Amino acid sequence: MIVALDAGNSRIKWAIHDGASWREHGNLPTEDAARLPEVARRWVGAGDLVACCVAGPVVEAAIEAAAAASGRRLRWLRSAASAHGIRNGYEPPERLGSDRWAAMIGARAKTQDACLVVCAGTATTVDWLDAAGNFRGGLILPGVRLMCAALARNTAQLPDAEGEYRKEPRNTMDAIVSGCLHAQAGAIERMFARVTGEGAALCLLTGGAAYRIAPCLEIPYRMEEMLVLDGLLGSGNRGQRTEDSNICGRKGAR
Image: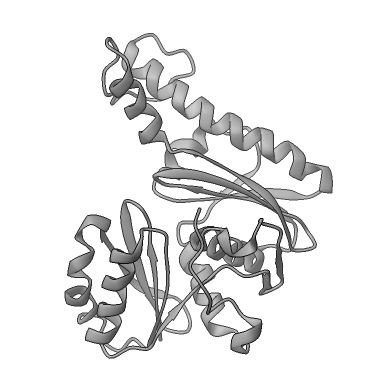
């Protein structure tokens, strides 16, 4: 068994894989990272812990404490120049966020065609992985909630919207939410237009806001709820030598 853990800016997600499937999973707010050792003690029967973290050194220390409290070996996923059939074109490669790297590892295991890997969380990242396994580049933009909150924070008349997506919005709440979702979908679709030049291509969507963005898209897509954790699992199970793998090195930024 293996525990995979993804520490993002808003939430820490974890799941236990029994060798055949994910058998249990959970999450907690990143601000409650100090509770991780308590959570880890309930991971009965699980083996190693493989993790990625983009939430900073305090959260990273909490993950290390959780591994120690549960008696598990901790392996960090770090972005690398190449690993798991992917060549990382980021400049420099180690600065690519480890969650984005994990998502691409997960995506590569699911399709050998060109794909767009979209992680929709606090920020939305849109990454292009070509059919040869080259990471060609990606976008970072504020997530849906951040976009809506920015309007509320920086304008005098617009509220913190809790509206719905509408094709023809006719009230302020729906107009704000629909506008922010159109912005997300537009960025994804513009990037996807480049990917389709390679022929067969697919957009893989993951993250807490993916379900809000998906209905707005007019491109082929597939929801992959566990994509980052799938990538962490794959990175921890392939048995590569340390110098050849990305379970080492310094943690990347976004």
